[in-house]
Length: 284
Image (cartoon, rainbow, N blue to C red; front, side, top):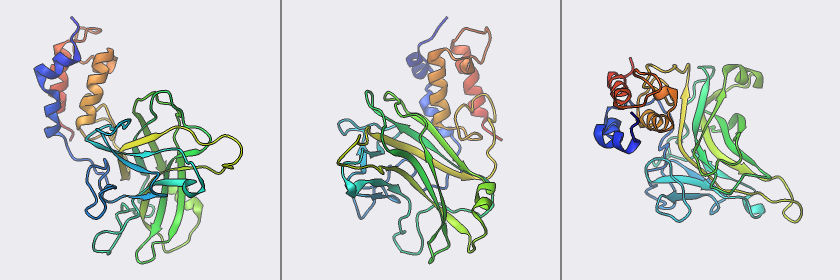
């Protein structure tokens, strides 16, 4: 017997499991861009646009906008002139009291930094002719704020056909050591989704394609693997809505990772019930 996902949600209320979710150790403030900056209504709190007004903070109700969770996301359209040759969104923003920045904390040689998130390119579009990705700027202790070193990671897929694509990049202690020994050491890292066009606006191909970003995360240290069969989505070791969402997608596609109960090859309420039991058990 095969069961429609809509029936699964209605019968078992999987969305309600969000309330059971454990909080991830995400060091980014406002990682899903839902909170509005009290001083600037056109940007999310803890984030600033670079080369405004090209970068956009979009709402799910905006025409042509894409949002993965909640009602907000950020958008980077292709560059159109030298004034927005480099554009992005950055956490390098002062707190309201001016004492520090929203940049996530970093411990020098304290373990691998992992930054992840989701990006989308609308159907019929493809990123082309520029560099698009996430830049990590490792900064020294305030009031210095100078950049100790920086790394750029380009998105691997230029056309996602309107589907959200998981993105992940890492900076290891070995990568930091390879930079050299230049104290004072970095104590924070700016998270910067960006795009950069080095070409000539008067000749040759111009940048193409819009990109939307949502649900970013930064952690440092060893990352756990899945804690049980319900832990389907990264970050592992945390059970939340993304695990439920992945189960629903796998159940609908008859993916073996959702086939949790016998008989094998049959996707039914026994698989759903087993998933609920794993999810309710939580991670250690």
